[in-house]
Image 1 (tube, helix red, strand yellow):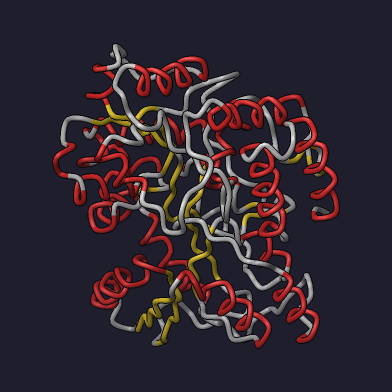
Image 2: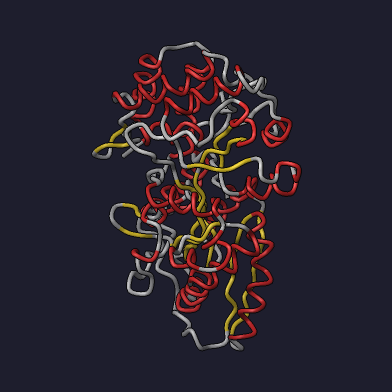
Length: 413
């Protein structure tokens, strides 16, 4: 997943037009799990393509069941889900991006999770909480991602630094040392603006002890929020990170040539580096988000949900159980490099021995998600605008935080 945001105005308009309410439908007569039936599944991106083969293997073990997987591109996933929800034609099982959950739970089209079949303790806490709306869980975590620090170890040594930065002060010092001593063009690459800049900034907010919401209301004018905005902006003010990037900018290319020797990103970049920058083998590493009050990143990923109107809920639950079991999760990682949401899967294979994966696991244990807000796309866009205002020198951190608080206050509740 990678977490994808889209405007919810179309969803809410369609929901009104088609009469979707918070209580949703109740589904028709339920088909027993052992009866002959077809289970429909929608999954996005690479996961959708890979799931086709997994579904065939599952069918071989369940002679009564046909599992029809429809892969959907992330670029059209939100609109397709919205349209299907409005028309009452959602599939039995769906992959649900972490930032979609609040919207579709509020539409009343998702079946609550059976917490006797799925145990909260089996999953990373933040991944489970991503699916909870007003105390009710609506999705089972499937895979997760979180942001950690990637850095060039060879260039750090050239700059006289022999260990990963543990806190904000050390991270800023390493960015300066890269430029001053290793003679890199930039010290770090942080996203200055555009869609989903909030993904780069949230680890700063969370590490400063800040929150997006407090008591159900935005908390974006807090001292922690101001501090996080100041710290993030400092990398641009000091010339450590470039203030503008071209659409489609590839940080891995600049990581490889050394012009951007440090950046924050998710687990998929380990594969990108290995495949596209083989010459970097042994010259880079990952580290937890450098701490302020704590080292706290944010968690994204996807969950699996069941349509409230599905007539195949028992079969759907069985299929989801098969996908979220520890061994299946470890195998899925081997197939896709998606990080398992089930914590027990990390005791197996490469996940248990790869030092980079150990860093991701450590970060996941303290990571925080985004609240399940129905209007998250708008909420996230307001954060993007606020961050841009400080990275581009259009506003102080205090001014940006005050405006952000005002701009988001009407998007919650």
